[in-house]
Image (cartoon, rainbow, N blue to C red; front, side, top):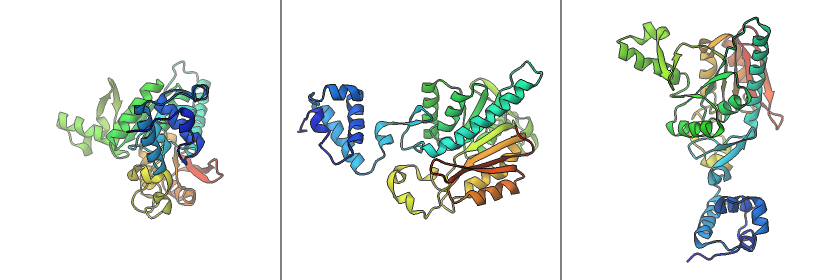
Amino acid sequence: MIQTMTIKEAMTASSLPRLEVRMLLEAVLNQPRTWLIAHDDEILTEQQAQMFYIMVARRTAGVPMAYLLGTREFMGLTFCVSPHVLIPRPDTETLVNKAIEVIRENDKLNDSTESQVAVPIQVLDMGTGSGAIAISIAKACPNVQIDATDFSAEALGIARLNAECLGVKVNWFLGDWYHALANQASSVHKAKGMTEDKLIDQAEHVVNGLHLEVNKRYDLIVSNPPYIQCDDEHLAQGDLRFEPPQALTDGADGLTALKKIIEQAPIWLKPGGQVWVEHGYNQAVQVQGMLEKAGFTGIQSLYDLGEKPRVSGGYLSVSL
């Protein structure tokens, strides 16, 4: 038999911080903070009390609040999250803000030309997870066409839901990094009896009713890949214990995905195109070296809210 309680009693029924208890009660009762304050003598039903007890127990065990509530705010937007995706973090806003800056610079260049036709800026978000990066960019920059990839079908399901709820259009691709795009060519080749090595440049596929060239080039590539070293002690601490391991670490030194994204980026970028990636606070030097080796110039590292180098990137030849 579940012991019921009033809202006021529930607020002090656990050792959790008061803010977290309030957020759990808001979720259980589907009511805002102001309602809870005005109705603190209301008695929780047995079902509500049971749900509250369960959520308190899970939070006490360390389950992230974002997973318990099913949402997390990022860039002023509310995103649905689940254990299939990373929880969006404020540090990643550094990457998104840089992407928005690049896109708006590109828009200014387009406006200065004599062309009367607005050319959509092509953006690729790799390892999109919840879609937080791609969707935030799309909300801030109407003149973009965004493709986003992830190897997890469950993650893409969450991303699609977020895009629908937030009213933006993104083309989603299932697969591992650039293979998510190249794999689309494979089915076309087989259907036409083509060989991938000879005819990949000619292949096209249809996404949401639109023809998209497999060999299309992007103005901007962004990514927040798994970059934590496999033996990093933080993987066994806090929220990281509950997040998808494959989205946190490459199982090695944390540089595998970063290297792959940067090395292959020139193949997928337009002349002057840019790539910007999030990385660990102690990986900036290695990432800058990768960018230089891959032929990028104007290489920079940007600092997160904690004043640590968190994002690095550059361009192929000239600024967008």
